Length: 382
Image 1 (cartoon, rainbow, N blue to C red):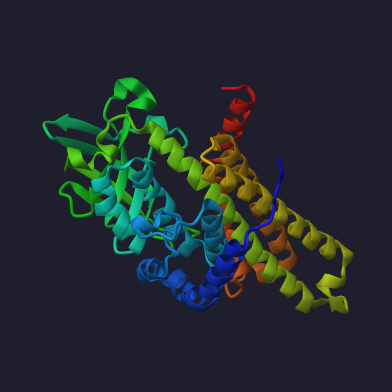
Image 2: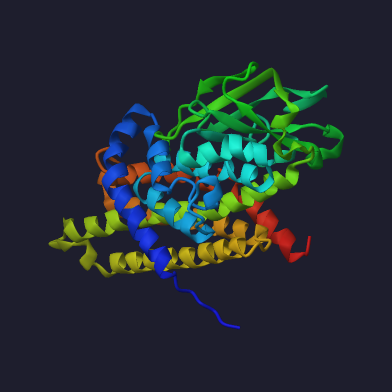
C-alpha cells in the first residue's frame, strides 16, 4: 500500500488554466457585480462553453469527466477572487445538478443536466425554509399526489440562484409520517404555474450572489418531475449535501488565499515605526501560521475529495472539512483585518469584502454545531 499526496500533472494544468481564466475574465467583473448586487449571468454560458462550469460530469452529459479534486481546484480559484460570484456558480455545479446526475432518470438528465452543464439552464436547490434550517427534517413543504401529478405547497428561503434559475430542485414531504425518510425531491421549472419568486434577499455579504425566497402555491408538477420518479429521497439530500460540503472546503481555502495575498502585500508595503509591517516578527509569525493552515486545509479537503471519487462514504470527512475550514478561514480573516487596522474597515480596500463574505461560512450548508454533532455521532458508530 502506498500514499501519494501529489496532484497529477493534469490537475496542475487544469488549476493553472482556471486561475488564468479567473484573473482575466472574472476579476474585472467583481466591483460592478458587488455594487449592483447582481450576478453576471453570462458567466454560466461562458464557463459551460469552456467545460469548467460542471467539469466533473461525464462527457456523455457534456462535462469534462474530471474528478472531485478538479472541481475543488475550480471552486478554490473562484473564491480567491469573489465569494459572491463563486457562490452562484458552485450552487449550480453541485447542489442543483448532482442530485439529477446521481438519482435522476435518463429523461431528467437529458432535459436538465445536459443543458445545465452547458450553462444553457441555470439551476437552484431549495431545501431551507423560514422555520427549517439546520434541522432539514422539519421542513413544512408538502407534495400531495393527485393522479399523475403532485401538488406542492410551501415556502423556501436563502435560495442561491433563486431569481435567475430556470429550474429548482425542491425538497418536499410526500409522506410526513416517515419523518426524514418521507422527503422527496422534485424538479420544478421557473414558469410552472404556482411557483414564483417572493423576493430577492438583501445581504450584508456575498452581495453579488443571487439569493431569494421562493413560494409554491398549489404548484402542480407531473410525476415525471419527481427525481428518479421514486418517493423517499432523503438519502438524495444527504449525499448532495455531503459532496457540497467537500467543495465548501475549497470555498474557504480560496477566500483564505485571497486574503493571504492581500495581507502579505500590504504588510510588505505599509510602513510603521520606520519599517514595513512585515519586518515585525509578530507579523511574520502570523503569516507563517496562515500558510500552515492553508496547507492543512488543502490536505483534508483533497483527502475527502479523493474518498468521494473512490465512492466511499465521506459524510464524516465532509463535516470535518466544512467545520475546520470555515472556522479556520474566519479566524485568519479576522486576524488579517486587525493587521490592516483602520484601512481594513474602509470600503476601498477589498479585505472588507472578504471579511463580510466570510461571516456566513460557519452558517450555510450546516452550522458548525451540526457538523460537530455529525462528527461526534461517527465516533459512537452511529
